[in-house]
Length: 234
Image 1 (tube, one colour):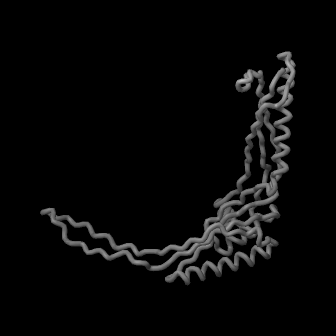
Image 2: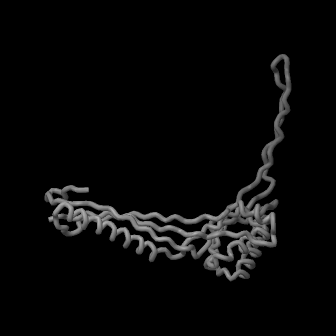
């Protein structure tokens, strides 16, 4: 685009550039919850703690470090009884008989702990998920294949976008017969496109054959950058 800059009436041109970098994911994130029920909150918590210990022992056996195991949430809430509904009566005179209903009472407690696990050996993701399912975790989600340190890739995508915008500016300036001056403004936006795994569908595969872990292709992730550069022109 072509315009002026502020009140100084400086002529400007504005160009945009786009850059993309593809990379193979080097981590897989898995999310799950562990749930326990009991007559008392302490009993429900004890059940969760027992399962969490099994989870931790298993993850350590898969060479997953504790720094890659994170508790995302811990919830505890009571469970209530449901009073019996009143039976349906037909009354010719429209007068319904009294219907005493019992009160809702606490009959127990549910405790749940949600956990995120970062799997650095991406090829082992299916084995880890198999083991967690055997322990009996709930609400399994993932794997979400990602790039652990994407800053270098972001810089590379930004560099490509800047070079594209600069080349467009040089071509346009040549076509207009003007010289590029200093950069008056710069803006950037970017996107990250992760690859998601099979999630709950994984359990279906696991039930078909427990001896062969599911194949989970990691694919490629795309990191993109878009820049806009405004030049003063002479």
